[in-house]
Length: 216
Ligand code: E4P
Image (tube, rainbow, N blue to C red):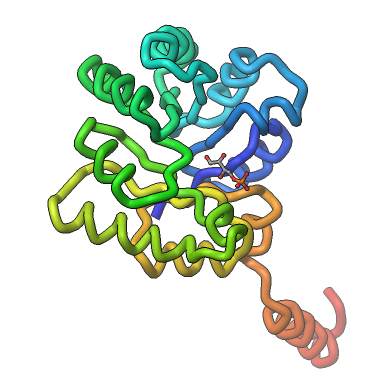
């Protein structure tokens, strides 16, 4: 399973990269706005740190505008993946970019037929937003299971990227469901190696050893 970090913050990206298990980065306009930086400049900075896929979202809502922005963003670095909305216009742009050999991440996916359509158009990644589905009292994980089944039924190569992950249980459920990738905020990644019994056990090992042999 691949692990991406969902942020445009360079410190968080560096810290996650230093863990040695980071496979890519996803950004979106809201995350860039939070940092208050130029989008293209920040993408270039991220691509200097991470060699895996870095998702760069377009702001245009029509296919022609998306393609113009996509080509500009794709020229920033070879590992840029173009993030497009899962709309009719996004679908057209996805197909055109796939035909040019440009990888896409189809974002804002909230129902399984969006995932089916973008797979047919040759998307590299599809991003179902599970946290936002849970936010409206529906089941985000159900969408992950449905997409996994559709992709496996027909052998689609589009990678299932679980997005809008809010807590470790989301990550565990996505791993068990066979999501190919999860994109996760830094504060949630930091929780993946935590367990109170690990801390207690480690403390006890050190104390027992020191009692027997002194501290050295
Ligand atoms: C994915 O690519 C999105 O940037 C992200 O996962 C959205 O998460 P949110 O619903 O927590 O904003």
